[in-house]
Figure 1: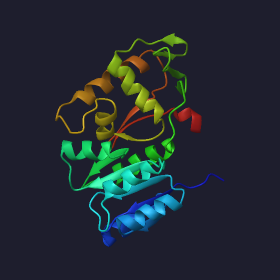
Figure 2 (figure 1 turned 90 degrees about the vertical axis):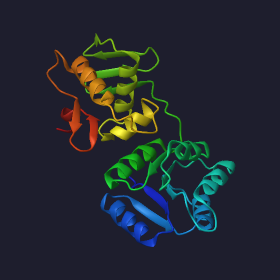
Figure 3 (figure 1 turned 90 degrees about the horizontal axis):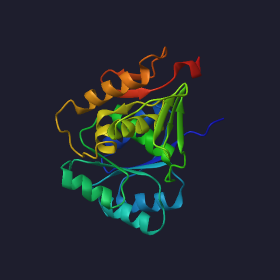
Amino acid sequence: MVARMKILIIEDDLEAAAYLAKAFREAGIVSDHASDGESGLFMASENNYDVLVVDRMLPRRDGLSVITELRRKGIHTPVLILSALGQVDDRVTGLRAGGDDYLPKPYAFNELLARVEVLGRRKGTPDQDMVYRVGDLELDRLSHSVRRQGKEIPLQPREFRLLEYLMKNAGQVVTRTMLLENVWDYHFDPQTNVIDVHVSRLRSKIEKDFDVPLLRTVRGAGYMIKDDRASA
C-alpha cells in the first residue's frame, strides 16, 4: 500500500483551515492543523510532514519566522506560503526566507492542490534523475537532448526547459502560474500568450510524425504530459 501524503496546515483562520482540511481529505491527503506560529513551529519540528502549508500572517510568530527557524534547525520540509500579500516583493521575501512556493490569496484550491502535490514529490531532496521518460519520449538533462523513438528532436532553450518541467511532473496538471514561475522565472502574470505560443511550438515538435499525442491542454487548469498507454 502506498502511504498517503501528510501535510501540516498552519493557519489562524479556523474556517479557512477547516475548508482546506476537508478539501485535502477529499483529495486523499491527511492533514494536521496549527492555529498559530509557535504551535506550527513545534509540530513541524516534532513530526515528519511531506509539505507545510503556511499562512504568512499568524499570531504569536509570523509565517516567515516559522520557516526561517525551521531552516535554521536543518528541517527542509517543502513549504508553500499562503498570503494576502501578493506583490512581487512579497513573494521574493517569502522565497528568500526559505519558502519553496508562494501562492497569493484568493486562490483556486485546484492550483493549491497541484502545487502541494509537486512539493510532496520533491520532499526536500534534490532531483537526481538525469533522464526523464514519458512513453517513447526521452529527455536527457545531461546532454541537453530530446529523442522520440530514437529520433533526435531539436529544441530551443526555453522549449527544452518547458518540456523538462512538464516531464518532471508527468501525469500531473501543471498550471500556467507554475510554468511562469518555474520556466520563465516570472512571479507575476505578464498578461501575454507567451505560454500558449511555446506550448504550441513544443507540441508540434514532439508530436509531429508520431501517432500518439502526449502533451495536452487541461481546459481551465493548465497542461499535462502523459502517455495514456502506460495506464491502459
